[in-house]
Length: 110
Image (cartoon, rainbow, N blue to C red; front, side, top):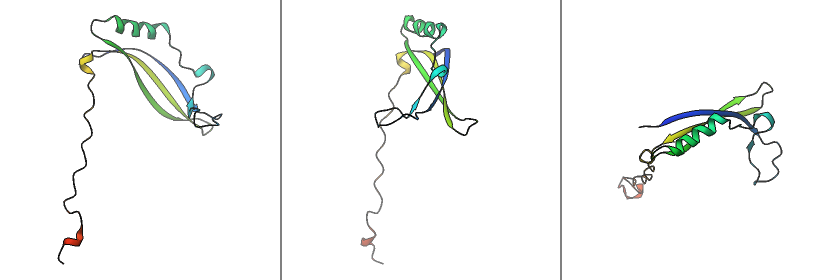
């Protein structure tokens, strides 16, 4: 594979304490922890777009953290990735569950 990993940006996400409906997000960034896409990250995406036969993608990694006050947060890292379309393959469809060997024990003579 010929993936080219580029610059990364990172931030923290906390549980949304202001969630009042199902339409509100469960987790949210705030204040200084918004993910800031700096110049090198944007350049990495632009270079991937300019590459011959490559797509610009954003890889996402997430870690669970426990804060000092006992609260939970998620640490998220975004990474600019240049990838060729050949590397993007659809996942095979899930295989159906095998049929049970015996459908009922009622047919057993003992």
